[in-house]
Amino acid sequence: MTGTLAAIGAGLAVIGAGIGIGQIGGKSVEAIARQPEASGDIRGAMILMAAFVEGAALIAILLSIFIQ
Amino acid sequence: MAITQSIRLVLVMAFMALGTIAFCQDHDHHDHDGHDHGTLQSEDHSGHDHSSHGDNSHSACGGHHGDGDYDPKATAMHHISDANVYTILDAIRIPLPCLVYSKDGGWDFFMSSKLGPGHHDDGHYAYNGYVMHLGNLKRVVEEGFPMQGKVEVGGFSTEYISKEGKEIEQAKVCHNNKPYLLEAKTTLDGGLLGGGITNFYDFSITKNVLSMILVSILLFVILRRAAKSYTTRQGQAPKGIQSLLEPVIVYIRDEVAKPFIGDKKYLKYMPFLLSVFFFILGLNLWGQVPFLGSANVTGNLTVTMVVAIIVFLISNFNGNKHYWQHIFWMPGVPLFVKPLLAIIEIMSLFIKPLTLMLRLAGNITAGHIAILSFVGLIFIFGDSGRSMSGGVIGSILSVALTLFMMSIELIVAFIQAYVFTLLSASYIGAAIEEHEHH
Image (tube, rainbow over all chains, first blue to last red; front, side, top):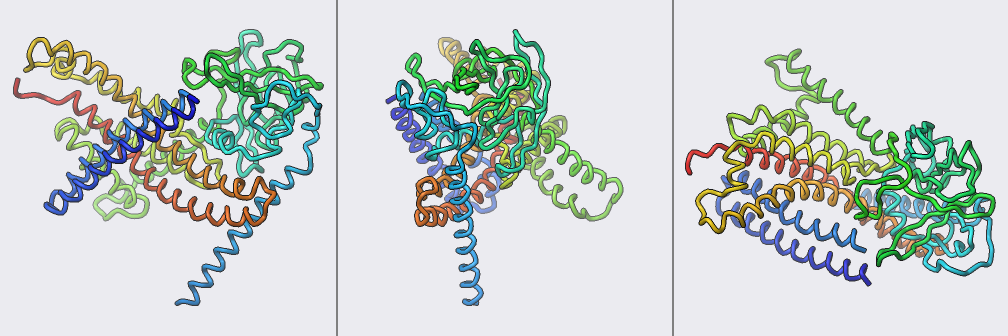
């Protein structure tokens, strides 16, 4: 039972992170399209932000692995 | 054009089919030839109905691990964990030195070949009470087992018992028809990962340690050659390994170190950032090479924890007074918010290295597990080697998905090394930043 709940929790965390990273990716592509000369800076910021969002999701996933 | 393409397609299909046949035969072989050490059976069905390894481990002195049905979870966990033997393709086993300490037995030093690792990295012998189960050293804790010298042991069995609401794995080894309880090595996770202080400590050079040593030597040789060519070929255009590494190093300097640490101080931290980048990248790629042991070094929480702690120490020991002021007594906010912010800042101080550690280990381990699951499709579709047509379908799926996953993992190997370096630089940069205002 705990294992099932943990798996559902991990899935929910991944949905959240997916929405977050999707927003980051979409917005930064828009930003690069508007201002192609700033693409280097935007890409750096994009990867940094994606890493933060991913970190939150990974904490949830690993906690759910440990809990079961 | 079309002809060459179709020939290529046929070749790929033939390759897949051959692979399946090889896999199926391999598994059939293991199913039927009956390991001589796993034949101790009895019709005792009491107790553990939860055995993970196959249908013949109902006996008190269990069937040998690996016979019977395919267990995806156990296989994946076995392949991502560290081991005391370096196994290549379940055929070549490079013995590694084992250095263990236990309170009652003292120090012990031996090569892991002494334990006779065989199929699935299970040992055939016990030495001074140590046995090898799934590639890892374990020690017998029950009375009556000969704790001195080398003795032959039978099969292993794994049970899952429920303790304090958690499922705990309990491995047993068979000797003279009697099962003896085993204990894994001491880990410092405090029970979080199911480990804890047990009756022995393992200081061996394991598969992960050997991989780290090999990759470090390789990196030293490559980077040394590149560095040397700057003196021998001064003023000329870069050539060979030098021209491969120069863009990477320049990228780290211009896109990571300079913007995050600052133009004035970045040079002091460049050696650390480059070391971290190449160390993580090298180990990520080392674990990606197929049929080379697939050591999951950067996917190991202990390894990433050590690197994250180094980043934590460097950033905090270099922190200036503005940094500490912003943590303990944030300027420019109302007084009643200051203690609240201090609590949050102190928490984030420790969450930063924690996420650094989890992100790298999680990403690399997730990639390894995904690839292992896709390879496992062959055995799931093929019903553990009993269904040929299922195996063919499974391996067509498996080859396609595994190739896709491996190309993704190749990108991830670079991105994670880059992200780790980037975040280290940003944490260090935040700690040493100069503030003109306030």
